[in-house]
Image (cartoon, helix red, strand yellow):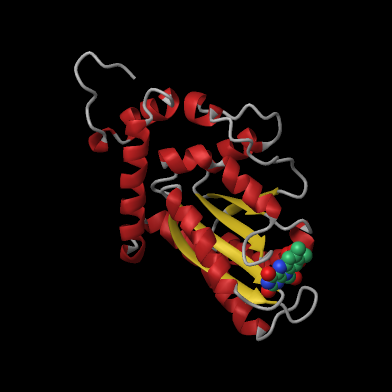
Length: 234
Ligand SMILES: Cc1cc2nc3c(=O)[nH]c(=O)nc-3n(C[C@H](O)[C@H](O)[C@H](O)COP(=O)(O)O)c2cc1C
């Protein structure tokens, strides 16, 4: 079972988020996973420039590490997204990565996969940031196996650390269980279905501008696309 971790802290795995991530990874490897770390502080993922090429041709023209990271995400069995809370949201590194994933949100290619969230903060708002990352996961088609977050007590330490680390290891194991047993999370179903409907309408209405995405939908979500009118091509 191959897990990909995307770490968004500019401190890499040496900071607070890295410390909490260690425990989640510990739980996952004990449950049989092998884990590949993608540390955004050591790779280059530039901000999206809004050129729409990913929608048209399925690839980003910016020459950096994004396409390789995308391939790894598409090929993995499950993934973990880890970020510190930076001003009530994720780090700029993680946000740049999310923005570059725009075509993944249009095409939902991670349907059938599971993701987990790791977050840390200086003083709180953990659940708000975890929810945001879980929403990103659901918007790629994947289901969220769970999320863990905490404010810090000191560098690489947390309040009620023993209980937190136990929960973190349990989250790693739960992600592996989800990959094996493929559970359906009813509490995520409503959002995922309405997001998919929204994307279907968007791709249908932009079928001529975004041929790659329209073709992707025809090949992968054909049941939910309206057939083009006679004589009409994509
Ligand atoms: C630019 C910046 C913005 C931050 N914004 C917040 C914030 O809005 N709320 C909060 O609780 N902590 C905030 N923090 C604190 C970090 O979330 C916290 O120290 C986190 O554990 C850092 O994780 P890391 O060591 O993995 O980078 C911020 C830190 C920085 C450097």
